[in-house]
Image 1 (cartoon, one colour):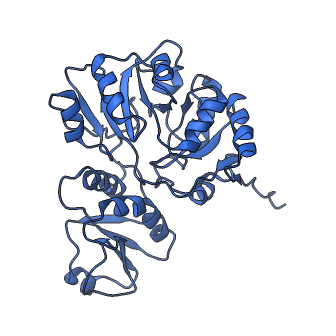
Image 2 (cartoon, helix red, strand yellow; image 1 turned 90 degrees about the vertical axis):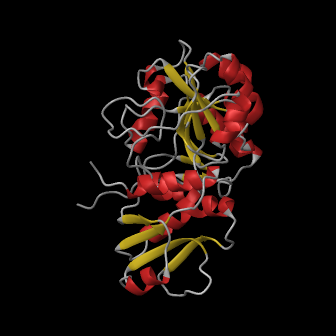
Length: 337
């Protein structure tokens, strides 16, 4: 006997009526996928343990990977995290925006949100629609990326429906995510030892300028079996199903040596090389913002094609977005343990 068709999530336009409806869904303990300026997140009331457990089930996410709590104000942030003076300075400089802070948590934050740790990751997003959902629902929102765990992060509502359409019911469409890669994560549990846990649009140098001290390099977590201090720290993450390998720079020799079913992903549009298996993230050689914006969308598109392999080019330099692009590509290319 044939199985009944799976439920498909509804995509909502961002009308006042729909925002009010989705805010009620969140306040009542439901899940809503919604846009942020970085990627789309799968949101639930961060203070509702049952609702947050539903995030883990929908994504197939291990309980050892904590969630980021999104807030609309510093006062709301202070209800979930204990802010030190350094954290207040950084929040004043970069919030709302693509920066997550790891701080000691308040007692009201459920253990499921923090993977049982005494710290919590907190961020004030810049996207007006996500901020409106926080305001209207009346609760901080826990929201990891709205995709099956470990897969390429979603930057459009259709990406969310492709990955989670039969597991959730509500997706708010806010267009393509502006930045396209997840937030920078800064560990400030001990303000004397700030550590960058994940690179993003806010650079290490910017953080050091505000803090007036050195920020140590981030360290990857290699296995999903022990709790990470912040999300997105696994060595393998953001991964397409199609095998992906990295090169420092793609050349004409790579093009000549590529098999017909191998896709070559350039950072920028190649000037004098053409071919049906050539793709790129940016049309201009100095536009890293566009490259980051298109990264996950292009990797998803190639993964959905008939390619047997993707060979991708790394971004040169130490710009914040170059480091973020290379971090996501390196995790996408990492082999399963």
